[in-house]
Image (tube, rainbow, N blue to C red):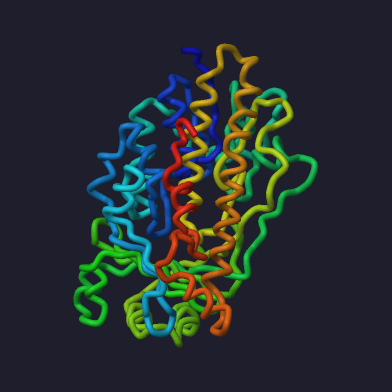
Length: 409
């Protein structure tokens, strides 16, 4: 087995999962993370079957089981009445159809479990090591402290405002994230508080992902941490800082955005004591993911940041890391690295860009104003021949999305 020295810039979900894939292939891996400690903020995140397959193949799925919730369905509901417009069956349907379940987890648990698996395997995780520039010719990373690290391959997993991308991969122009017109609030409600309120307690017993959709707004909500918390993500018109996940939000503003929503939603919001706010943004399609030297590559949000309306941002980063490890395992000398990285880009770019377009399509579909187009959408979402304007429920798109095997496809 030919061994490479790989530096991964960025110690988030995508970077750590990538390091596990590379370490399984026998490579030496160092993660350079800018933060002072592993401290993921946020709330719930979805782990779809295409990600669960990778965790299973990596031999680490079992450590997730005490922390996950397995929902029965994704219910798209009318914003004001709660009427179910479209239902995507998840359990046991996803396992029956694609071999793996659809799971929900807290982001902090997800990243911690990946971190523990990676460091147990021997991945080196360096904090206080934020990359400030990458030299694609010398294959070196300079961090804020002035230290310089060299490697055979550099992987940029450093997010939507990627330094690796801007200094080593797409250098001919500045790549600016494209903010959508929407922000999102994130909040969690403790189990005991949910159960104390008879109006919303049923949401902790009948385990589903519920999404109330209306004009320019939606609320996605589901239990996480094996039922310890109720997670809410609320999309609404507004502005926040791109790339920041932890701006405090205003509770009264939050409630005002959903004043005409289903009484269940309004009751849930009375139990929210604090809320975080972040902007929803994606990237324009990039001309390349690999540097001209063929020794630096970007993955995840650095390459294809997408809107969250298919819950595939982290999943695609994890697929990237899996496929990258498979391609680099074909190297028999360092001279093979450029062709391996370009093979990775060729195999991954079209899929990621297609999913990014699907997420943007869902954003439009979900946020229609009441009227003729909305009524036509609702009619088309009723069970029919497998086609559905909601990308989650369209049978052909769903099969391609969730049935993907990143190790072989």
